[in-house]
Image 1: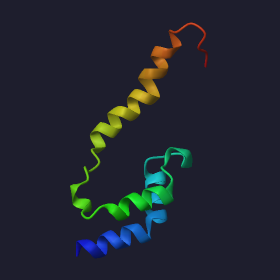
Image 2: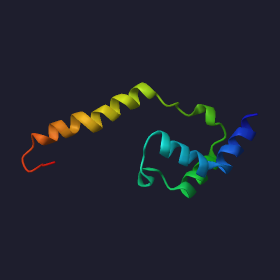
Image 3: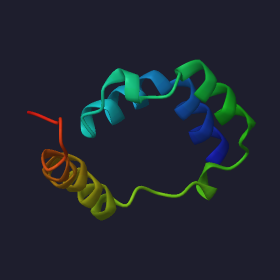
Image 4: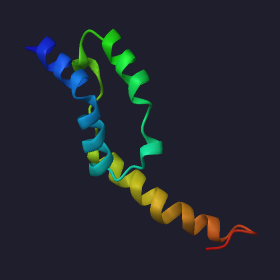
Length: 81
C-alpha cells in the first residue's frame, strides 16, 4: 500500500527527479540536493498530505517569468536583451 509506494519513491528518487526535470524543463541547479531531499522524505510518514501540483498555476507562473517580467525589465534603465 502506501508504505510500499513511499519506499519505491524514495528508492527511485533519482528517476523521479529526472522525470520532473524533463517535464518542467528545469535545470539541474533548480532541483534540490537529492541526498538532503531523500533524508527529509524518510522522515515523512504519509506522502498523501503533500500538496499536489496545480498545472494551471504553473502555466500562469511560467508565462509571468517568460513574458511579463522580461517586458517589465526592458523598461528599466540599464537592462538590455
